[in-house]
Length: 487
Image 1: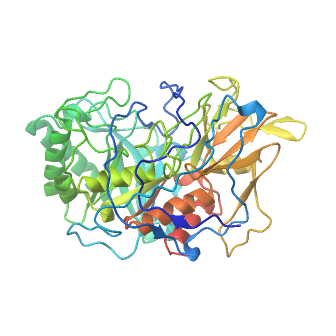
Image 2 (image 1 turned 30 degrees about the horizontal axis):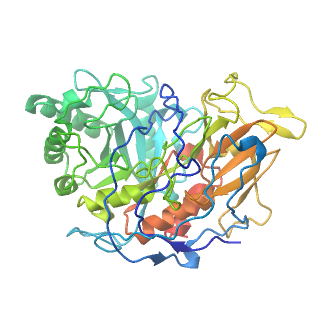
Image 3 (image 1 turned 180 degrees about the horizontal axis):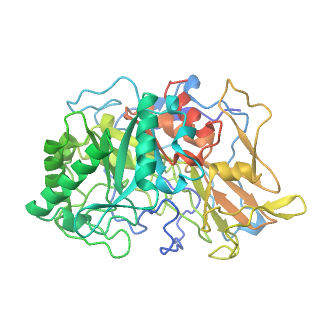
């Protein structure tokens, strides 16, 4: 049974899943395998804007035979989840209409992209990517150092891996960008853009790398201008101003065909006083697009919340500005055109314990731990992050018998887990009373809904973090492609 297709273009506030008004308990010392994490203390109030609601065509919705439902808190989970009694029907409208271009020429075809982190090279070489499904691949990460040059996140094999990725991508008609920064790679951005001399040196080094590897673009993943971000990051109140000056210079020295993107929070850049910037037209003039990082909203916690909420349908989130809808509203309200926004989609989730703030310590080499017909899902990276492919491989999710090659695959819970649906954020989660685990994640259904939203509001496309988190059958990617009309 398909979920209701009534879709909100934007809402008064953006929703986060199950946590109602509880304070969030979070471990800031564990950034996760992809090395980025959203800030937990957010003060921006999403601007109130107005526009009509939109109905997503039935053909745009994922073909699923799993009937989502608003769960009731079971006895073992009363301390974890607090579910609202009913959803509100307050719709918010998007300023400028569905395809707000603000004077820019918007492409007619949406783009599908994915990140390729350097640490997956040994398990997932570039030739395993089906480039027919992707327009762009972002290689992550190059990291700025104190000399404003670039080093590699994984220095042993990164250079050869990037060359291989670019070669295979170009051979199959796709394009490749280099992503610079990341959660643990943003320490030196502030000083690199602080002066005219440093900006020119930094840009010159980026150009050299661009030319050496025959790239098609550069992605700046600064987390975050004017804010603390990761531990040890240099921060200045002039970061946003200096960042803009740097981007303008970088634009002048890169080839005219080069694309420049920036990975950003769901909240806008902040000005010298720390307030959200209200006019981002100058950034839009030098950036080809931004990637809205709608993930890592909540990580592993004794009170789990959604990793990547679509919206705040219940108007009860403790982080109302951290969702796809809220991010879209914030950036477009600050005069950043919709068709220069790409929605980030996660291919991973988080494992939480129902009785403790942290999961039990397990060996990285350990696989499935069985107890009767139940399992305890584990992270392959030794942390609390779990890829969608590993949920399937470890048996917590299995493909529905009704799935076939002509429809978007549906996955049902298995091995002691129960799949539930949080209608406040429109994301699924798994729960097991045996293993005492809650897993917040995204699957083809929730990915398809986010992609459908991106299409309805006129975004440029979607970008999966990361390509290796999908299944070998490309279930997440194909759900997104179907929702935006490419299947």
